[in-house]
Length: 583
Image 1 (cartoon, rainbow, N blue to C red):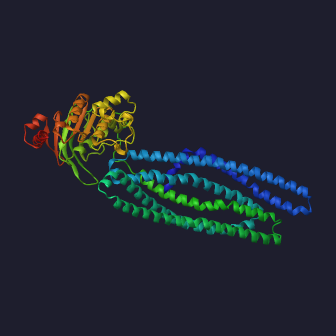
Image 2 (cartoon, helix red, strand yellow):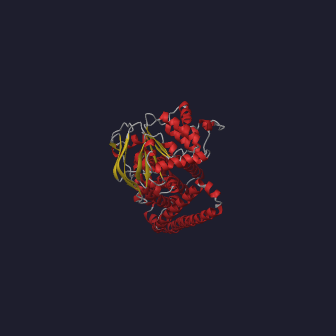
């Protein structure tokens, strides 16, 4: 139960609902005691037919029937209130747990998402939280119900006949032993099943995301075969868990049946011997034992839910215990102007061991533009990730406004940066809302203006629903160039002091690129702009150009300075100029 201790804070949060639920349960169980007593009284009245008149016995029976109906209705209504209180509480806890887990996901660093797959993340926030909800709801409710019913029923049985109570409860310790052993197996098999389910979810998510590639390579049959193998494993593990669960119900019925036989035989012998005064006691005890049937039977179900919840909560806790590597060290909010400097910065990716940057230094004043060029894997995108503090440097310092980036308020830093990633990601929402993602309160006029700046407005209005066109998953409705331009519009509308473009014009044609660059030149006059590109045309107007190779700066300067010196930039310029002339 150690893993489930994490949930105690939620029980405390909803303590009033919890306590009211317990109180209602106690009252409901008290009312259930009336039925066996009234049935016993009715049998005693029938035994007294020789002494009492038939009319008197009939009147007593009708009176008992009336009170049985009334108390049963009251008990049923209170049970309804109990469920409304405790089950609704579990839904609130489920809501809170999902939100807490999602918020924690958002805080975790980039390296966490490199280590873990999307399907597994989704399974833990859906399937695993659902299992935990079964614990905080039905499992807790039935546990309370069982404990209180046992308490009130056993006290009543003991007051009537201590000896008969002892005999009728003899099978219960055997039941407890079996439940304990089965619960251990359920816990182990539930953990295995949930882990396998995560694998299945991950595989399915990846296949749906990459369906175009699968179809393009005509490997549907191969992926179908892989899915069938995973699905078969999931079925096998689920059947193993279900078989263990299936033992509990019949075992409950068997032992309760034995208890009933014990009551009938022992009670009958005691009645014959005169130990108990009337046959109505036996009827009462049979009803009391059957009143315990569902609570005892629910022990197995509750035990299963608890074991499954513990296995699921353990998986949830593994992620909740993950500490973000990027931590906000500044309690004070910070105003950011936008000057950027790197001072002898080196960085190694921990997961791969690749040394991405080696002793990088440069200065970029506020309002100036920096272009970064280089071969694939030279460290261009790493520089951008360090500016946004997606990673922390291994040595040296990244400074914003002459302040080490670690000393800036993390939220303020991220808000001060408008980032257009290399792989433009759009949400399955309208084009309007995708652009508004950069500024939630943006007006329609602002959205259109930024779309025009990104040279995508004319494309959007050609769609039947215009800006209200709903995009497919990851923006599949749009072409690569359109996705990049919508992503640029989203960044521009944020109006942040730092604008970062990570090779975000690679999918657009040269003519459109020139239009966007001209618009950006006007837009970013007072903004610090960083452009990562493979095209000289995107870099030539920058105030400073860096050429990277294997994590080191091999050239830097303005367009004219670099053209006047031999090297990578000059070679690239004439190569691309020649290609343009050929085209």
